[in-house]
Image (tube, rainbow, N blue to C red):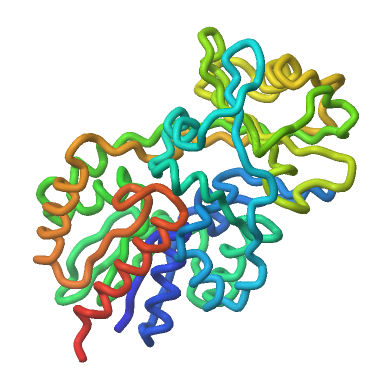
Length: 351
């Protein structure tokens, strides 16, 4: 059976991997010129810079299982430094993991966060690279899907620019606002509600320093901010403390999380961190990542609405959805979602 996966983020790549392992003929269509979605890792002058998620909860089994299948299980590393501080305008004070997670909008229990995080030795992009390499013959970059329709007993996907692809089955591994529009076009009642799921904007600034530029000791993995007048900065991760080999010896890598701002993010982050951590001088370099639509924020009764949409999807053959907009926004949740969508297609396929 020919299956098209639309979207090459971690959910789409995992769905394609699961489908390929089950013997399906898979093609992956991605509108961008690179796979990975919000997972972006860059190597800069010996630093490992994350543009999106920098790890996954240590107690979650999905990434280790996927890494084992891909032959990179030995590349998973544990969090090196633990603990989070709170900046409330005066000094940095220890804070429990559950409260820190709540301040950042992380949907996880305190005990789960307390167990720490894990990542890959060369950054989260390592798992994307492994998936893309093993699915290289199926991956089609710069091919955005503009429309979807039934064509006889199959699906026809219109590609931006005028071409089209036919398939027996489709997995829409897209942000909910994009998938919602496509599903509405094929008559899925309530699909507009997916298009209305709010994706919070995010700006992160990674900055490299020499250790001797930072006056205050970098204790733990970072700090969160809860202080009137400092709404523009939400948190800072000591990336070179949190995981090993993120910076060359005698250097530090900091990552600031900002809210929406009209100011220059790098300048704003430098100013705030200089005051909080006693940093002297300019960073060696800085790298800003903008996500106009970052992590989804579910409304009340999201699960019930999603269940109704999936029940209506069952009336259309061989069509599934996967991604952060549905069953959890973390990396592990996206892996689960991708596998579940692929398995649904396999279960529906003729024996």
